[in-house]
Length: 213
Image 1 (cartoon, rainbow, N blue to C red):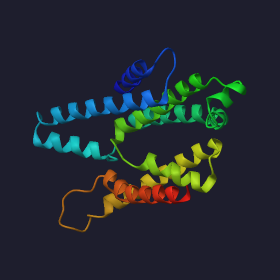
Image 2 (cartoon, rainbow, N blue to C red):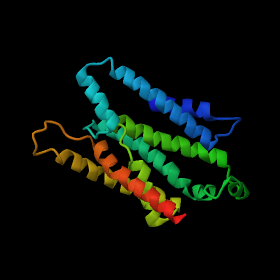
Image 3 (cartoon, rainbow, N blue to C red):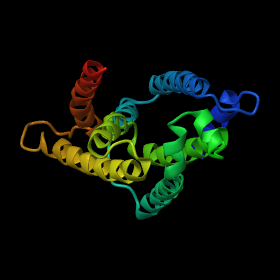
Image 4 (tube, one colour):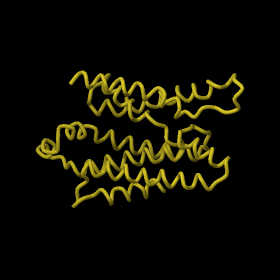
């Protein structure tokens, strides 16, 4: 519910004269993220040490055991957003050519952006509500898939989902096993592993792209 309200709030702020400019949407998201993070830190300062640890663990990202009902609800939200994005994959290919080209082909760019924004936010909101902020999976996995399959969204969307899920499961396995035979009584959050792998690899991809320009 909170994710849905956040989506509607950001959409209402970013919308300008019936349009949804990309730069305004990104800026609104960054500002709102900073505000929410400050609010989380404020709450973190008021709770007990055990609760503070749980908050930090969730902020880093962790795949704790959840009830089947919660898993089913998250799966429904993610699959709904995934189906919507897949259905509009061809139009997203046209949109990547620019608004003018899309308009010539009969595609309403603003309406399509709104649909993509809502579907993506639904998927992300449901996943983050359960797993926390697991970084770099959605940042560098699509770049890897784009290098392999190209920029066709009809392949890019399902391939990113499959490879991202596989990478997350592998990272979670490493996080749970790394400290297993040591004296530590805790396990690493999966977000630590994804960041340690994803950040250097993303920098590598960025530098490679810069050299290609």
